[in-house]
Amino acid sequence: MALNDLRTELAATAARLIAEEGCEYGQAKRRAVQEILGDEVRRSTLPDNQQVEHELRRYLKLFGGKAHRALLAAMRETAVETMQTLQEFDPHLIGAVLNGTATEHSDIHLQLFVDSAKDVELHLINMGIDFDVDHGDDDADRPAALERLSFVVPISGVGEPRRVGIRLHVYQRDAIRIAPRHRRHGAGEADMHPIEAAGRANLNSVRRLIDELR
Image (cartoon, rainbow, N blue to C red; front, side, top):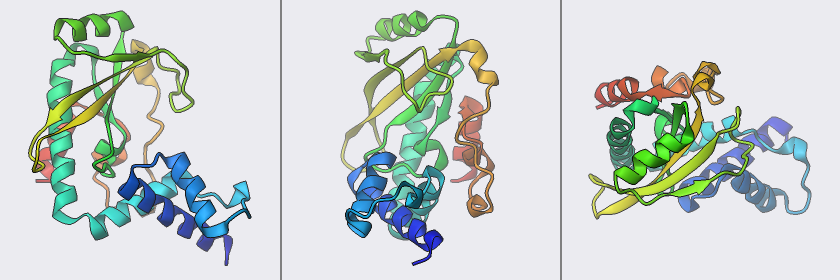
């Protein structure tokens, strides 16, 4: 099998594991390699995250149908509601809920840009929100986040009542000048809405995305 074909097969298998089991990208790729290659693991054969994301988008279009579109719309509406309560911290939506690959296992990821991370904590406390704090470094955050806060909120419009995780990645205010890590340029993502492909969206952009895709 040609290397490019192998990477595509690995990416498609990893995408299925993400959609069906909620695996993280790294875990999904490792399991895909184990399923297809067994112990014959070579790092050079692994697909990159963008290729896995592309296959995940294809998988969800083929098998997700109306249920996935309804879930994605509900998660984006929930993101808007949360961003409205955090407007003073310049919230931006990132990740799977923005790029259209969110599943029932996904969280809503928001970037905040602040003068002090403690202001966000105090704001959540005043709102009566019970949250967890993670001060550890994370290779996914570049530049490094000051801290990450997480809590859960109800989500409606998806059948039975459920809750979804909110992940706040808190940055120094001037970090907004750094281009998003997950901006998409490839021809393979030509079917993405420009706001989805941008990698980061403010409140007005998310509202426009919802309106235009209804």
